[in-house]
Image 1 (cartoon, rainbow, N blue to C red):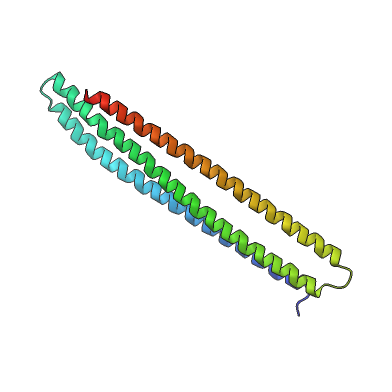
Image 2 (cartoon, rainbow, N blue to C red):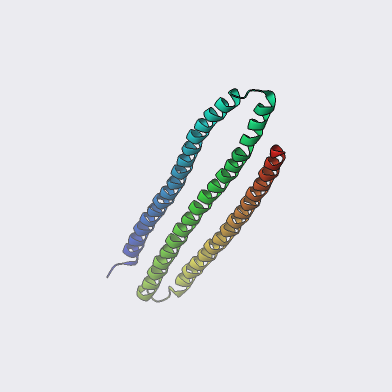
Length: 187
């Protein structure tokens, strides 16, 4: 049978390993998000460069100012629509990565809590007589820490929902504004 000190040493080691695994998993998810954003930005930059060259050639080929302005107005609508689509892509990537990070963190916290509770219960079974108050205090501390984690998780979810809502509203308003501007450009 392990002594209480040995049990705490094993638990401490497991906790440190769990925290390292959590940091590694969160970093991995964050890098995935950064990779997706970089890929999106590279694709947009490449496409934009190609389209800008084609648009410049069209504008330079205009025979008179009216044709020039007509071409410029026609090119404004697709550009605005692409900007709105880009904003939606960024919002989707950000939301997806945030969701994955939250799930990973919640799962790790739940597993760590389960292990710590099991350790305390194990220690309580083997504790010498008269240590009930200390064990009760430790259980109370674990309960308070769990309540703190739950509150942090709820607050984080509320903040993320607010950000997602604001992003959706901003994207919708941007889309409406581009549609309105494109409508004016056509006239």
